[in-house]
Amino acid sequence: MRIAVFSDVHGNLAALAAVLEEVRARGPFDQVINAGDLVFGGPRPREVMALLLEEAYPTVVGNTDEWVAGLAGGPGATVEWTRRLLLPEHLHYLRGLPRSYRVEPPAGPPLVVVHATPRSTTESIMPDAPPAVLAGALEEARARTLAYGHIHRPYVRAVDRGLVVNVGSVGFPFDGDPRPAWAVFTLRDGRWTAEIARVAYDQEAVARDLLESDHPDATTFARRVRTGTA
Image 1 (cartoon, rainbow, N blue to C red):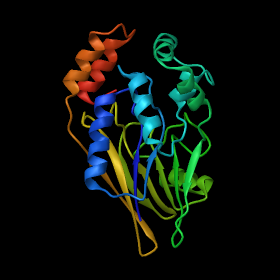
Image 2 (cartoon, rainbow, N blue to C red):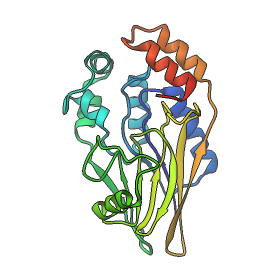
Image 3 (cartoon, helix red, strand yellow):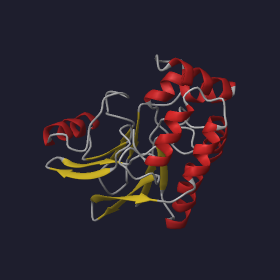
Image 4 (cartoon, rainbow, N blue to C red):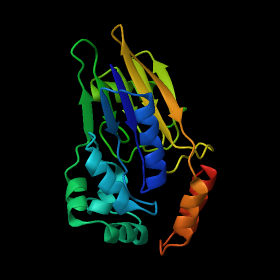
């Protein structure tokens, strides 16, 4: 079994298109799963929503999805700008997303996908988190393999309790590499393994798209696109 997981598109349509093209090239996959934060921040939230609804991937809710959907408070101006560009059906979709998604192979251990942690869309498990923190997250997930997004810093870490993977960010990587990141999970002989994949795209065009729009924080998000940093 092979599973592709991506996260944190953040309204960056060009980056999403590049990742999905790479997913198709490296496929077939048994499932493609979206770990949340779909539209906030980038220049094309409506187009991203339209594409993701068309693809109909299993998707979990992210913290910025909750902001845009009105389920939690967030940075006002950019939230309002994003919400204004979406259609009512887009907001309805965001409000109905689950907190986690569980892959239950017929002959293997489960893989759980969340946005941040199994209990929260806002907690941050960083790449250098103590092993006990990762083990606790696996215990909360009731699984030995956990995939998440949120921190925009991809990594793969094995611990005593199993495997924890941050799949990185499609729209705004924060690890110094501006190329979109996603992850490939492979189940073989009863064990999940994972690798991080990167793909190039025209991030300068996205930065210009932001700066030429009426986005209220265009300068910040254009810098993030260009540099791959927070």
